[in-house]
Figure 1 (tube, one colour):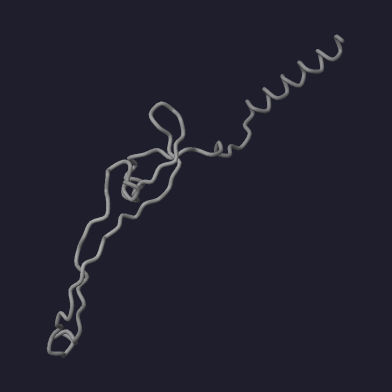
Figure 2 (figure 1 turned 120 degrees about the horizontal axis):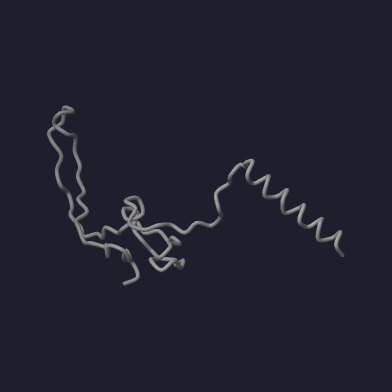
Length: 107
């Protein structure tokens, strides 16, 4: 089914739309009255999300927000998070540059 969560299977459910009128008793009125009951559908809040599957591939799926918030799926990482360069990174870059310069001198 197209309008259902691919993880938990949540799908639209039927319910009632209750229309009332009048002023509540605690507010000084004579009470609220039901003036109409009609059928309606409660639809799940589905989002299209790129997730990482168990075998490591990325896939676009439609999942409900409760599955998203509960951590039932892991979202695909688009970019590696930013890291400040450390001394070891600088040292590795210097060693690599020195190796390149030595290789040029040999030619």
